[in-house]
Image 1 (tube, rainbow, N blue to C red):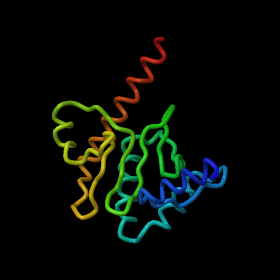
Image 2: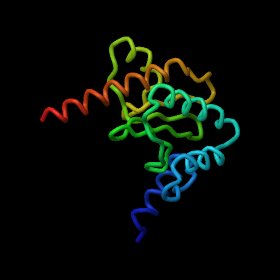
Image 3: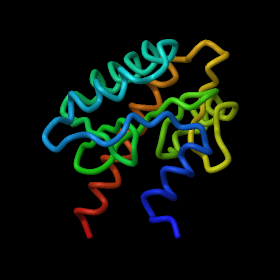
Length: 148
């Protein structure tokens, strides 16, 4: 019988996620660098640009590998991003406003996560809006949590 870890690894491999492995404790920044270094050369600049966008929009957020993906945390999970065989995925799903949802519709996956096809130009301005929206949603969630 496979262990839970092996099952997760097999599922990720089947889904086509490019996993760089687990970081060493205390090496969050370099773990992200290590992750990006083993990504295919064609996606490295895309991943670096997404990383730079999130760093600029949420400078107080910390980076780490979580669920086998680069992630930013700000009093909890803010955003995850990962390369797959044919797209870049951004998680978790966001609600956004009507105008943003209309723009995101072609990029929505089956569970609402975002998939930006690698065969198309990556819409970095749209990703910036996603990050800003995700920050707003996250802050609203934390504020509501504090009021309880």
